[in-house]
Amino acid sequence: MERASLYEYLSRISRLLMAEERSGREALPAVQMAALHYLNRCNRYSDTPASVADYLAATKGTVSQTLRALENKGLIERHADANDGRVVHLAPTRAGKQLLRAEIPPPAFRAAEAELGNDDRDQLRELLETLLRGMQRSGQISSFGVCRTCSHFRRLGENRFQCGLTEERLTPADSEKICREHAAYATGAND
Ligand code: SF4
Image 1: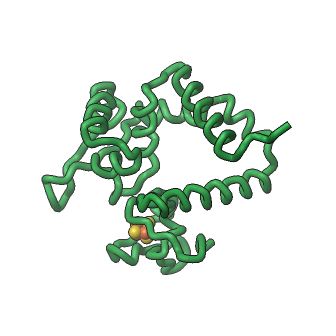
Image 2: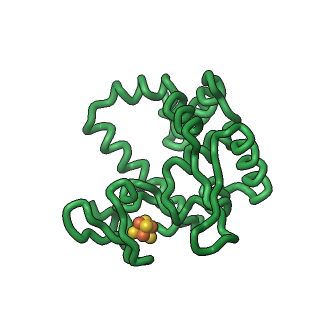
């Protein structure tokens, strides 16, 4: 019997994940869940409506409706930038974070993932990351990678980091966030 292609596996998994997310107790429409999840993972340079639109590859109109709906449900809040009042930053509220903890990842995914050993899980994550980066490169899409894997990331000492692009200090929590300015190393991740 012919084996399914990688594309078929990923496509099926992605549909199952979306169906599971829709059936959750506190389910949101998929685009709202994706935007809320993104805002919980991104750093302070990436929490604007335009960044949400880029990350989701969605139109500004769709994202604006999505963000309004999340705000009306009390799941995100906005605040003005300290230096530029025209710039809006967004963040999940306590209720938004609670919803994410309850719903993401969905139970069937958690159970299937738990059946993989640590080594398999790490290897799968690396392979999927490589695949994602390849797609982003060919589509010239921002990588939105994790900060500590960025070529601008500098280690100043024990738990002391700096962004080489903005020269601002980064906390250990910042280093685990995703960033729209992330620049991948030419030859792969740095650690
Ligand atoms: S080091 Fe890279 S990923 Fe981290 S904040 Fe700076 S530009 Fe963004």
